[in-house]
Length: 104
Image (cartoon, rainbow, N blue to C red; front, side, top):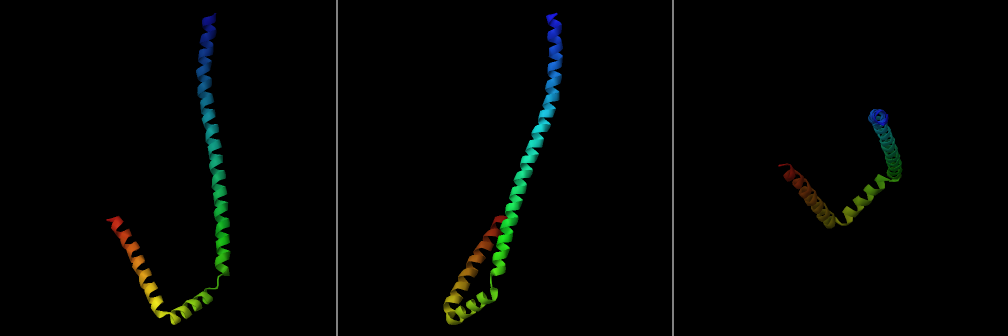
């Protein structure tokens, strides 16, 4: 009689494990899905908030006034302005050239 009881529990055990394993995997997948969705929503909200803050800062900037300041600086210091523009062009050229060398 003990053998029949052991046989019955043996057949019930694997059936329960496979059924429980699939349910457990489904439950884990659901939890992982919820976790990923929560993290995605949090990151999305943070990016939207940061975007809105930066948009407000850019809206507050008066680009006309900045352009006037640059013009007056260039008119009062043409040599410095020329050297700065040549240096900036040189650096931009180096950066662009390095990008082309990496692709070959």
